[in-house]
Image (cartoon, rainbow, N blue to C red; front, top):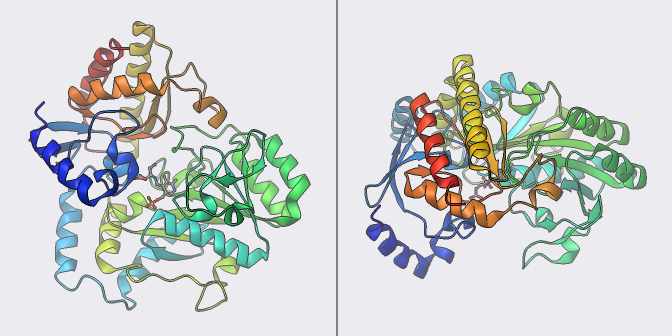
Length: 426
Ligand code: KE4
C-alpha cells in the first residue's frame, strides 16, 4: 500500500496539531506505524489520501452504525443546512429530537443536548452533585467518560480508591472527590457504599464497557449498582455514549431492562455530527438552568444540522438492522475464535451485539485488572498486518470495534481470513 500522500500530510499536520491529530488515539501511537489520512468514506469502506481502501471497523468510534455517508442522512443535512446552520435560538427540530429520544429511552424524562460525550457526562455529574448536594463521584477503572478534569483519574491498587490525576494539568484537588472502583465487582461497590454511602453523589458506569475493550456487565452487576444508588440516595448514571443505539435501539438499558436515574448519549444519536445528550428523572433535570441552580450552556447545543443528522439516523434504526448486526457480529466472533485456536495464540474475543474486541489475553476480561494484562505489543503487530491487508481496526487494544449495517457477510469472511494471516505474524 502506498502511503506517500498520507506521509506528506502527516509531516504538515505535526507542525500544527499535537501528534498531527485532533484526538490522541488517531495518531496510532498504541499500535506503531503512522495513520493513513482518510479522504472519503461510504458504507463500510474508508478511502485514504493515497487511494487505499479499507473495510472500516472504527466507524468514527461508533456513530457510523448505518455505514458512512448514508444517502438519507446526507440529503437531509444538505437540505437543512441550506436553511441556516445554527441560530443560537430554540427550534422545533430539537423538540422533535427530544421527543424521539424520550420514546426510545423512557429513563430520559427530561434531557439537554450538548456537543460531545465529554460535555454530556461532565454535565450529568454536575446535575447529580447539584441534586444530591454531595461531592463524591464513583467511576470504574478502565471506564472512560470523556476528558473533563474530575474524570481523568487513575485507578489505585485497591478495590476502590480515591483517584489521583491521570493527566498532567489536573490539580489533585479536582479529583479528590473521585473514587475509582472495580468494574463487575458488586461486592466492592457495596462495601464502598457502606463506607462512604452518604457522601456519594453519583456512580457513572459504561453499562457495557467499551473503553478497556468490550467488557460485558456480569449478571446482577448493573441491577445491583442501581439498587445501591437507590438505597443510598445517589444517582446512577449510565454513560451510553458508546452503547446507546449500539447494543440495542434503547441502548444497554433496553438490552438489560434496567432503568438508571440519568443517561448520557452521543455518537450514534448524532449520526456522526457533534451531538450528545444528558438527561434523566425530571426531579433531577429541573435543577438545570434556567429552571434551577445547576449551570450548563452551549453555543451550538442542539443546532439544526446536527439534530437533523441524528433524527434521520434514529429513524433508520429498525429491528431488521439489529438482527443483521447481531448475525454479522456472531459470524465475526466465531471466525476470530476459530482463527485464534488454529493459530495457537493466547487471545480471546468478547462481544455485545456489534461491538467486539480481540484481546491478546487468555481471558475472560471482567475488569481493568484483567484487561491491563493484555499483550499490547502483539496487538500492535496484529493491527499493522490487518491495516496492510486493508482492514481498519481500532488502533488500540483497549477499544471496541464496530460493525455497521453496511458490512456484508463477505466483508466479515474476508476480515476473518485477514485476521488469520495477521495472527501468523505473532
Ligand atoms: P467525546 O467527548 O469524545 O464525544 O465522548 C467521550 C466519551 C464518553 N463516554 C464514552 C463511553 C466514550 O466512549 C467516549 C469517547 N469514546 C472514544 C473512543 N473510545 C472517542 C474516540 C476518541 O477519543 O478519539
